[in-house]
Image (cartoon, rainbow, N blue to C red):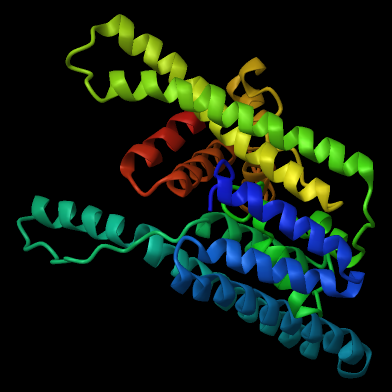
Length: 357
């Protein structure tokens, strides 16, 4: 179910109407049910993956917090040795959960790409290729909800936020339908906290949210989809059209990709705001940026912030000297490129942006 379809235009008012008719304690149940229904419109079987990611990170978060409480309780009685054992158990639980979730993501998004790369290496050394005749259908939104759930887990491990005890509320945090498929990638400190205290109906939220939705639909359907006609025509026949047309199509592609993504993010913000939930703004006039560094502060802000806080800074950031800073930037942008798509083109695109930095 896409935002710019008649199905969603009918779906959203029904969800909002029933949401405000229900008691506040029941609203999480309703939003969770509708979020799962929304996701199952693509492929019902892949709801298992969404539930698995939710369950794994929920259980691991609770385990980490319980181990931390035991550590505090026994610290004075048993001394430093027990404290060290408790820390190791937390780390082991954390690492296992991270690897399981990344393993699921890798299989569905990168396994075929990995086989392709490996076969190229085997052919180079005159070794027989690995046969793989199956196509793996990529689950919609898996990159977004996996990062959101792992961000929550890292926050719990660091002690930046409590481990959510209510499974329904946490499941809604991972699967909230407005931002499930295309972001923004929300932080637990923002979205999960808001789900604890649902707001009553406010006309101002309805007005602003409705305007966000209309503006997002305008960006997507009027600008992005019209620009796509020129882009697809020229890029689909690049040998026919001379260089001038390719330049024009490239400019239109920049407009298309921005309005498409920003349109979806704006519709997501508007849909959530009607229910009194504030999602972050994912774009801040990126084409007004004065440098590549400034651009990545403005474009897909939730993803850039995620990689900064959960990968770049833990790698050492800019605290370990100039060489480590440059290495960390290249690593982060290469992984960011791979996150965008399972091909070497995206990896090189990411590295190129790292070099620009």
